[in-house]
Image (cartoon, rainbow, N blue to C red; front, side, top):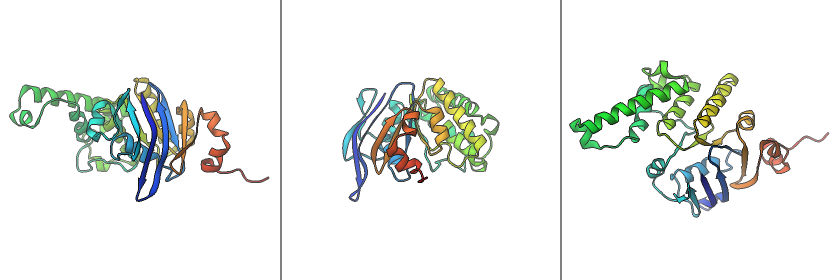
Length: 253
């Protein structure tokens, strides 16, 4: 589904990604792990068009998307969440999901201003989808609340609902369990499993190894912008390079 081929990116001479290659298969949950600063979020930014790589290519379902505008990439079927939430805190929970839901509807400013049937149908369809997404992530009862009033874990789920409103074929989740309690992390893991069961492919950046090991069929490990290991969770857990770079080298004795 997604092919990242030898992507390189530098900022003012500092190499952020050094020939990163990976693939996400249809229907899988691919884990991407590594120390802070290893290039995980930067990679997501390249895939979603926020950064254009210096070299290399990104293909989605066989079509090149390297350097496309982020809106065009969303239109191809890729959505994401962010480490630093991008919620509209002055809007309601429902309105936060309506914004991306409306992105999926055809129409234009003139149609909206004139109240043409096409625009009204688009609003109705977006509203139904937004409500369904909130119900799916367990925030239906909070639809009328202000987004800024939500607890931290609820805000994480709202971020996921906003991404789902775009009806993605591929969902990029950037640390969805960060800052959550143990119970909330298990709830997020269950939610991700339910998203996968809907046929959505997922690339997951996450530091909680229990979440990663429990969800992912394959794991890619980054360190200093390079891929140092790819494999099944059990293989990654015992890989010496991963243990040294990420999990921590074992103590003597």
